[in-house]
Image (cartoon, rainbow, N blue to C red; front, side, top):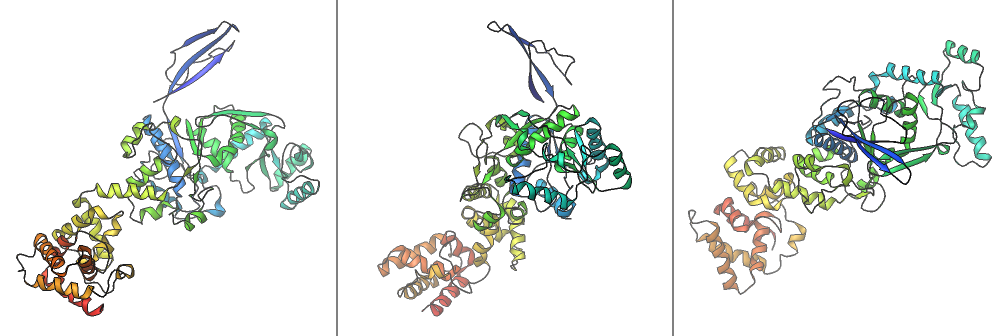
Amino acid sequence: MYIKKRSLSGKKRIKKQPKTILDYAFIKVDYSYLRITVKYFEIMSVRVRFAPSPTGFLHIGGLRTALYNYLFARHHQGSFVLRIEDTDQSRYVSDAEQDIIESLEWAGIQIDEGPHKPGSFGPYRQSDRKELYLSFAQQLVEQGDAYYAFDTTEELEEMRERLKKSGNPSPKYDSITRQSMKNSLTLPQDEVQKKLENGDEYVIRLKVPRRETIKFEDEIRGIVSFDTAGLDDQVLLKSDGMPTYHLANVVDDHTMEITHVIRGEEWLSSTPKHMLLYKAFGWEAPTMAHLPLIMSPSGGKLSKRKAETEGIPVNTKEYRFGHYEPEALINFLAFLGWNPGDDSEVHDMSSLCEKFTLDRVSKGGAVFNYKKLMWYNEYYVHHRTIDDLLPQVQDLFRHSGIKADDGTFLKSVLALLHERVSKVDEFVPMGRFFYESPTDYDEKALKKWNDQSAALVQSFAGRLVEITEQEFTAPVIKQGLEATVEAESVGFGKVMMPVRIALSGQGFGPDLFPAMELIGKTECLLRLQTAVERLV
């Protein structure tokens, strides 16, 4: 439940009880001004919505918005609603909605109501609510808060060009220019009616007042104010009968009983238009909260182009199929603009839901630190058990063309590699040498293969020959290498690195001696000899 504070001052009275429980009332008397302020608290059931447009795969910024909505809802035992805002049919992508649903579910964000989980407030696609928007748009026209506009594309362009030539750098259809345009405010009523009856194309525009200051309180940014002089007469209903984002957004949030609108900062400039609509309809606006932008490490908003340049996956799908840990991505995104109020960094979804509050969301942009994301990913991979990892890694090996059907052997491989990988898919390239001999050798590693290396590898191999199959264990193998180092009067690494290269083709990897034990004596000797012959 969410407790919402309200204030009534002076002669204003409470005309009716709030929706549910009221009347923890506090009376404060300001003797300087003889003003009485009554404060009370309304307890409401929280309902939030995530309302993406199905114009492409779910952006990582969209996932963070969904996450913050979800955490807020769960913190207050409320409902998380998925609404598909598909009013822009020209940009509609057929499989985008399914991607959004699957991405949210993969991330552990449970949808309470949506297109695939109908509730009492559907339909949950805006394209299925077309008649609803039309009726509300017509209501605004009848009230005098909106009007029909019959201007053609050519006439609109002519208006803009005319204003530019007269020195207006950003011309718009507003309280001044509307007077010279073709709309129901300038045309005779009989002509307007005739156009409607003839089926002439029109749009419905919001009648924005000329000089008015719009103020609202944002949960993150405090009091925000806009002058209507900077606003255009926004199109509410397009000529094809579909609503624009602004009308549909307000109508849906009201009729779906959304209590809190938590969305990206890019929508802050649209909020004054929404407040005008709420006022025109006589509805109470939801509580607003505008999240900070996600910034690129190089500066500016994290656009698709910048993300690609900096090697940052920009769509949630890339994380899903890139074998990232969903818990790691969620933990990382939660901290991308929010903090729990202490130095803790690792929180699962349950802990995040418990701790999340809007007052700890920052106003400034949050930089997407990919290294920090990988730190989280590494943490969550390392805290998974071998048994939990086994089927996933087994499947990855299979897709790479390697049969890893022996679960016991693969568990031993995973145990050696577990603390060395940052992502699950790294098990395959790092562990391939357990299943097959290297066909080539890493160029960086070969820089450490010098003129002595072949002889040192042969010397070590000679000691391995003397070890029986039963005695071919990590401690005994280590003793053999130590004996080689002492006999050849060289440093430990002078022998160990060439041996590692010969066995795995890499200059890094798991603890060498347990790895050799797992590969087996015969295979180790064969690989050592092959490397000596190929790398002389």
